[in-house]
Image (cartoon, rainbow, N blue to C red; front, top):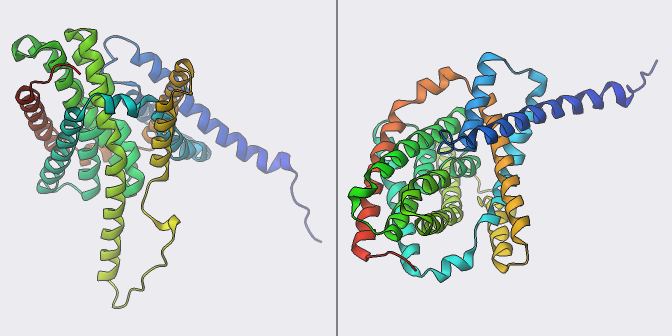
Length: 356
C-alpha cells in the first residue's frame, strides 16, 4: 500500500521551528552583547566580539542542541552577508573625497603595510595561511567585521575566524588604553592625534574611545580616517578572492596530470558580491536620499545581524581548538600593530596633518 505524505504539521513545521529556535538563540545573544557593550568598561571591546565570546560560553556551559544548527548556520552565513551590506550605510564616499588625498594615502599605506607585515610574520611563525590572512585583515582594516567579511573568500574554519576576531579585539583594547595614557606625551595637536588613532587602531569602538581625550574634533577626524580604512575592505576582498582561487587551482593542478580549465562566467568570479552590496549602500548613503535617522537605524540593524553571525560563530567553536591555534598569530598581530602605530605616527608627524 502506497504511503501517504505526512501532513505539514508533522514535517515542515518542526524543522522550521528548530530553525527559528537557532535564530532566536543568536538574536538573544546579540542583544545581550549590545547591552553589555554599552557598559563603560566593556564599550571598548565592542558588541561583535562580546557576542562571539557569549556564544562560546553558551556552548561550553549550557550546550547547543543539534536541531538548532540550521538556524545558527543561517545567522553565521546569510545574516553576516546582509549585515555587511547594510554596514555600507555608515560610509559616505563624498566626505572622504572632500577630506583630500592625504588621508586616503595614509589609509592605503597603513593597510598595505599591515597586511604584508602581519601575514609575513604569521607565516614565518608557522601559522596557517588562512589564519594568517584573517589576522592580517582584521589588524589592518576594521577588526572583527573585516575578519567576518574576508572569511568566506578563504573558506575559513569557524575556530580560525573566532581566533582572529578575538586577537584583534584583545590587542585593540590594549592599544586603546595605551594611546589614552600616552596622549599627553605624543606631542600631537588634537586633530593630528585623532587622525593617528583612526589610521592605526583596529575597531571603530577602539578609535572612538582612544580619540576621546582629544575632544570632539579629534573623534570626528578619527572616525572619518577609520571609515576610509573600512573602504579598503572592498579592493582587499576582491584581491584576496582572486589570489585564493588561483592558489586553489594551482594546488589542484599539482595532483593531476591533466586539469581542464573550468568554464568562466560571472558566477565563478571570486568577487564577494555582498561586498558589492556594501559599496552600493555606501553610494546610496552618499547621495543623501536616505534620511539620517533611517541610515542610523540601518547601521544599528547591520551591527545586530553581524553580532548574530558572531554569536553563531561562537556557538560552534570549542575552547580546545581555540587554545590550540593561539599564540603565534597573536604575536604576529602584536608586532604588526606596534609597527603600524609607529608608521602612523611618523606619517602624521611628517605630513603635519591636523585638520581638513
